[in-house]
Image 1 (cartoon, rainbow, N blue to C red):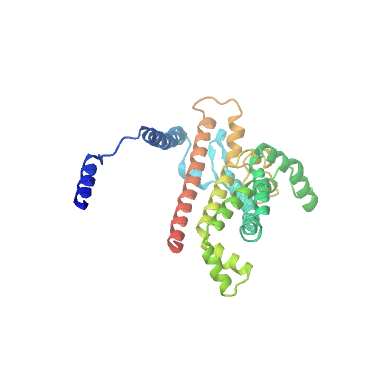
Image 2 (cartoon, rainbow, N blue to C red):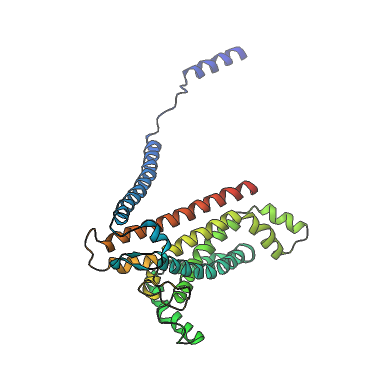
Length: 314
């Protein structure tokens, strides 16, 4: 009887095909996903190609010298002065001011939401905080001009703070970037295994010690990535600086004086009537390529930091 059963099972197994059957639905979905990734890469390469092609025309124009562009401090294309430092210093100032606001506040909010807030409070506060990221940046620009600038003029004096200044633009940019950093940092803190917290509590650590000495170091890779993304966001911000920072390149390190950032200059120049292949027209693409290189370097640094610290904690 047992031999008969075994023979029947062997006969059934021989009739079952072990070949992989085609699943056309999964194949179509896989193809769409591949096409999406390929299309994104293709668009990026197209943007880089156009930026590089037009920027090359700028550096081939008479009077344009790459070394002088990187070392001089006057940006006046109409008189063949192409020093990028007035635009670059203004961009760096607004970015530093923004990150000085966004990093500590964002870290504090993230630690509170991750370690202290009860689930009901967290589910209420986080969406409210992220509403800030949905406000149009032009609104932030006029908020900086009509609220932050008068506030700074009242505090430091109207003879010290100009109506257009990089300080007010940087402060409001910090408010704009705050939800980005806090959200990404809170996600990184929440991803830390619960066992690390419980082990620290078992050894007698307080809640603050666990948060600052255990959870934050363990989530350092995600926190670093959030900061780098915030910096990239600040460097590329346009409307706030275009409205509140000032018009016209100005080589200054004072946050109370009007100056023009790279993105603000691009907006102002592109708003006029520019003829193709003119100096001003080609300079827009050269500045855009310069911004692209800055953000690319920041992303490379971010990936290196994430890989470095992930090896420690995984």
